[in-house]
Length: 83
Image 1: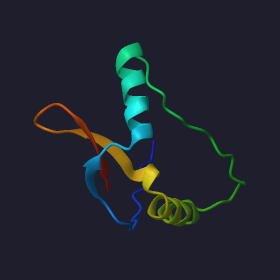
Image 2: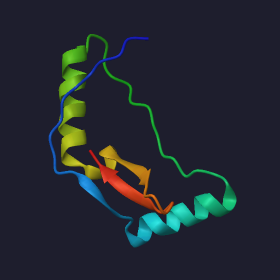
Image 3: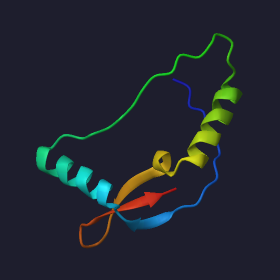
Image 4: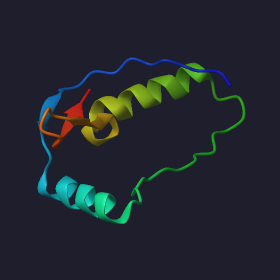
């Protein structure tokens, strides 16, 4: 499998979870099941890796949710960390 790195720009930081993120975190913690979303996009034959990287760079830079992950504070509380 080839790995393609792509740059992106956008505001970031670490903050408390929003109320919606908190509800999802609580549901995940209680049930033991994650609520991940994913998908597959078919691209036309001949689409270049550069085009895909540029498209991902644009999308990830524009949408904070695509670059948000959980970090845990010293007290064990989850925080949203936006790259």
